[in-house]
Length: 154
Image 1: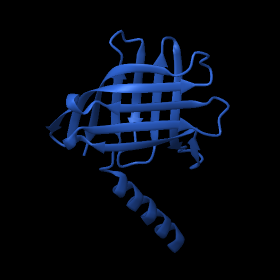
Image 2: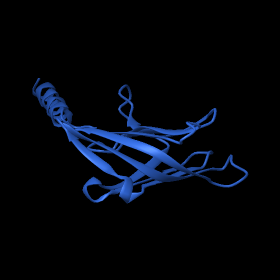
Image 3: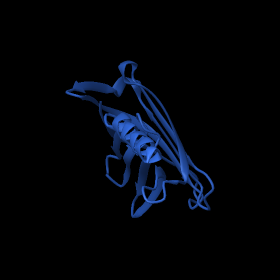
Image 4: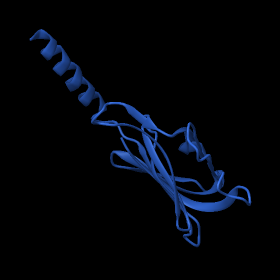
């Protein structure tokens, strides 16, 4: 019986710890809307789900805990360097252990980054340079300038 209470206490503590945690929502698109980057990127949590839309194609970078098996499912890693107060936002994502090789680099042009504090969070907008590579592309990496927004709730 005591094992049940210890287990329940650990689960309750874990849920309470994550209650205020959130990731950052990232949305980017090219001027012609043919290229988009959308998803949740690491903030307080390590989980992420990021999609790149290129015309009719969708590529996905993800890492999450399967709530049924409690196992981590992932195909990629994401690194973010962010200091919105000084105009820094950089994202690098790469697949691993996947037959499809994908790489995404996105960095804000500092002079375009604008941060707005909102109740319980922050929002930013900026222009970014994107380099996206897939081993499906015969012509090499796709390079594009995107308009981006981020939103994070604290």
